[in-house]
Image (cartoon, rainbow, N blue to C red):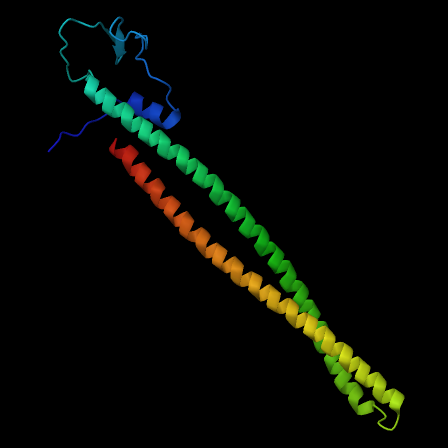
Amino acid sequence: MQAMRLCPSILLGLALALPLPPVAMAGVPAENPDAAAAVINGHPVQPAGSKTYGPEIIKPDDLKWCLANIDRINAAGRSLRADKARLQAEADAIKAENAELTRIGNTLKTEGKALTEKSQEISRQRAKVDKSSKTSVDAYNASLKALRGQNAAYQAQVQQYSSRGAQLKARSDTYKQHQSAYNSQIDVLNKSVTAF
C-alpha cells in the first residue's frame, strides 16, 4: 500500500485560486532550478551535493505529484465552470419558456371563458329564433358557424399550447439530469480536493 501523499497547504491554495503557469519555487528561476535557494515554511534551503529531506521539506517526486494533481483539479474546475455556464443558460431559457407558456395559458383561459359565454348566449338565442323567418334562422346559423370556427381555432391553440408544455417538461427533465450530473462532478472534485 502506497503512503498517502499530502501537498503543502500553500500548493492546495494555489490549486483552488489560480490556474498555474509553469511553476518555479520561490527564489528558484524556472530556467535553472538547481542554481538558487528555495523557501519552505519561511526557511531558505540551499541545494546541497547530496539532498536529505526532513519532514518539513517536500521531495521532488511529491512535488511533481502535487503539481500534476493541481493541474488535474484546475482542468476539472475549468470544465465545471463551462458546464455551469451552459446549465445557467439552459435554466434561463426554460424559465423564459415557462413564463411565455404561463402567459399563453392565461390568455387561453380568458378566450375559453369568452367562448363558453358566447356558446351559452347562442344557446339562449336558439329558443328565440323565429323558425318561420329565413333571416332569423340564417342569422342564428351564421352565429353558430362563427362560434364553431372560433372554437376550432381555440382548440388548435390549446393543442399547440399542450405540445409546447410537453416539450418544456421534457427539456426541464433533461436539464434536471444534467444538473444532477454536474452536482455529482462537483462532489467528486470536492472530495478530490479534500483528500488532496
